[in-house]
Length: 277
Image (cartoon, rainbow, N blue to C red; front, side, top):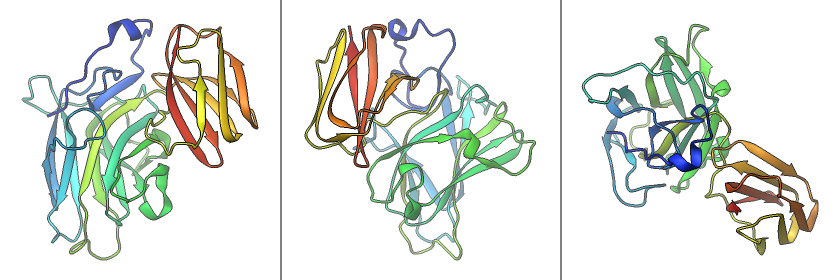
């Protein structure tokens, strides 16, 4: 069953069209989307909804591997509001596939979709740190461009998705006897790339004042390479390249509301919420 998505009408009423599409999330900032999901075990998996330590909200999906299968393959199908039948959904208006994933598995795997009865897939390799993911059994958020999904043929279409999330191993040999449990959370599509609020934090870094009206200042023990300000839905509003430990910028032109500010320095990134008033 899909976790319930709430509406924050006042915050997002200015948007003429949905910027996000919920698949499996409790984030109140995500727009409506799929009502329910049906799980199908292609091979090796059992599905459950643990209530301990999700990425967000109170639940997440656990794809538990049986340990004996030569490969693993789990499928989630979108369902109607009555949860009586599978449905076809369109993701054609969106550009990014977002999810949080947690595993200790060293097996490279595909995230797949099926549209117009054609499969498209993107390879996630823990050893290559694909899209910032690694197999350290901690939550990692990925925002994957739909353009990176490789279709089996040109007939693939985001406008007619019937398998909205597929987890499939890609390995030479067998997965039997290896650890391949996967936890999945915060699944949704978006128009813009989404920044994670759980990135590695910079040391000795501050942003002030917050809330702010006119000027926003930054202070770090390291050289600040880049500062990006995004809307809560991921749209980039401002980008600066200070190349200095201290920096101030004028934000008087921003509309009042909540923003995400990402500061990058020495290969690390820290994302914080900013309230503009």
